Length: 263
Image 1 (cartoon, one colour):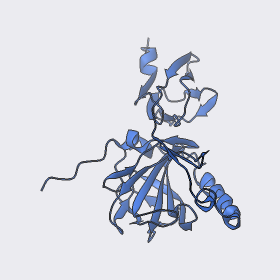
Image 2: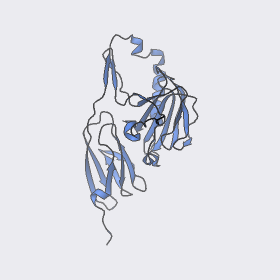
Image 3: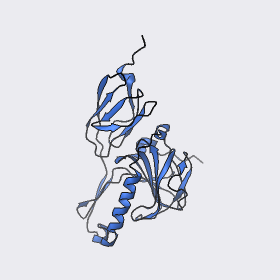
Image 4: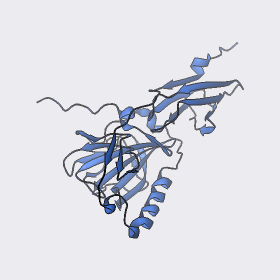
């Protein structure tokens, strides 16, 4: 009689159970998975991933129906995080609200970004690991938020890497380019790279884009040069990771920024 895998062997999750995390998982091939009612893609060899937003609630249920008909519900408790909140008052209205003549442009560009992140490619490139697309001091962190003239702004969903103008930005993991825009209103030169199963990276405020939509990049391939295009106050890379529309903390995926080599 063939051995029957235990419940622990049938469904394995790896990663921190906290807000902003992207968990890597493995289950039996052919398993049907749902995360609190949302279908989760499972590769032919049983690889999957699930993500949790900046403000994800605590309690989640991962429901599995295995190929032999056995069912399992795994409870996932997501720990909360504290974020840096900054209040700034007395700013001119033009610094708080975009001018009316660019609102239509912003809406159109937001739609482009949403479409570029909506794919569900079958490849599991995300599971092969991520490296930093640029090295330098961290000048902005995931989850931080400003309240301008009493109006909460959208939280910062990426991590900012400060580096000299023109620093080469490279692919943190294998993927296919789904957006390559030279000049978006807020984010300037912008590229989105699809890593499979709804996992994507976005790279903002760049110049000299070296890729186009449909390009297949390997980890370490060039993407663009670091700059301050769009609404930026100085040269930096804003790197973001999504699982579909769920915002992920890149530091939880790639690990801490490597320390510079000693002289």
